[in-house]
Length: 425
Image 1 (cartoon, one colour):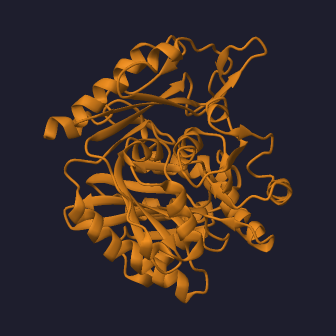
Image 2: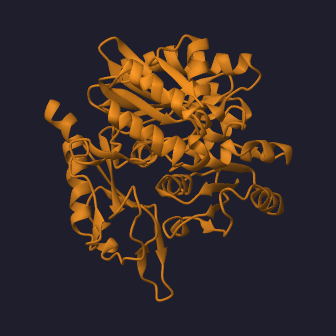
């Protein structure tokens, strides 16, 4: 098969790495890719949001399957454009991608499908949102309704924090058009987990559970980010939770989307809060998580390409993902200033030495290469350093040992990824 992966982050590097081992693969491209994907695929200089150029490339190169990594191209209609060109694309239509593209739409689907979620209201007027906060008080969760690269969520502990978040999102437009409206939610309390399912519009198969760490600082402090690390499987949340999520969240959502004439195909990411009342939906995403994808794929023994092809063909009944024993941990190395204004251009050294650590694997997220061949930081989240092992403790040792071998004083990372789960076991 001739395959095109769309995107440039750590998730896409992990996808390309896993796909490169498939016996079905003939040739693999990544658009636009990064220095990591270049080691296992052919990078092409097409932006992930340049949908006409992606379609033209896919036509000219007889692509059999397009695999989108990030959400923005899907919300912009990448899958629709590929379908119009008779090219298979393992991702939802723009109409179905509204599950992530609009927080309020996802809430409407949850309510219609009977999926437990936080109480919520949508506001497209900033003063009305402020009045709601003054009337209802805090804590409250303030979310930009549109896409904000995983950063458009503020858990406000006080009314002042909530009002400041509304001003930043709706008035100052720190997330651009994503902040034209906000969703205000009750603040759920509990453990947060990410559950993944591969869907073909009617059928779904589980693709594992991971626990992400969203806050920039250790101890879950500081601002929300796109994710600072993840581990899988969470020891406290096993098969029972996965089954419960498939029956109570994934399949009802698929049925409601199909009823509306917008069937969901691709990877459905269910963000859950495990409250004292049971699991409740935080959000739906329409793709693999980042960095959850990096950790999950390290444990997937079965062929990813075959599974994605089956989802496009409506043949998921024949797919049964096979997972290795043990654990995987993914730790994000970010550049100073992230998630605000990151410092770019700093040089990164000793990746080759880090990659010799037993059980370690490094995925590139925001890197570039200078004309003299030096690896440099070019984004906020720069590397995802992963470790695998017989258990969570061994996987963490591997990941952090590899980080210790990297020479990059301008970077930072959380030292507690998976730590709370380890202490609880």
